[in-house]
Image 1 (cartoon, helix red, strand yellow):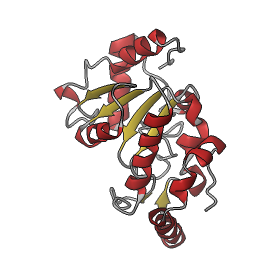
Image 2 (image 1 turned 60 degrees about the vertical axis):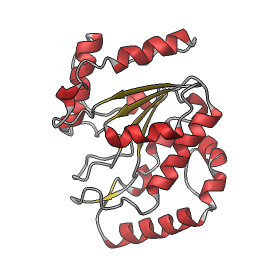
Image 3 (image 1 turned 90 degrees about the vertical axis):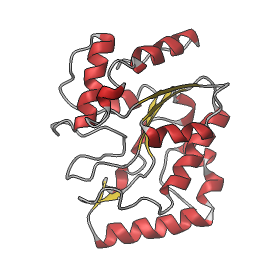
Length: 220
């Protein structure tokens, strides 16, 4: 079926788009957007893909659900639009970057600047009902995004996967650790950030690996 997504992803995932689970997912999502308030806006569901073609991916950061408050989610994991207050996890990500790399806190939480450098900001579930966390889980999105992770692992080499928290770390089973660098840490949420997210130095470690592979480092 036709999916409005960046061309390289359309080619890489074309067999997935033909599977019954994905057709059922599309029907569910269309019905949800037609009957209730859903985030992100429909045209931004595949924002991470549109900003980061598969051959340009350098780093993958896995989230779980889009933010479910007004004006927050725009299709990039952990990211919010300009002028939107930093959610707690994003604030902690910026704190770790400040400690790790000495970079000052940015003025906004829009991570499009990362996506355009090859940081693939993927949530496991790509849509959510307003104010209902997890409301679109187990509807087919996880099957789709697992296939995305598997496809990156198979088609590419020397990608850095940043897996924060137990949920994301389970996805390591989909990744070939002989070809890629997998970095794990607790989730940056205030509930767990002090258990090892702070001090994980994932941002400098990712850049060291990219440079060692002859790739340009990320301007975090």
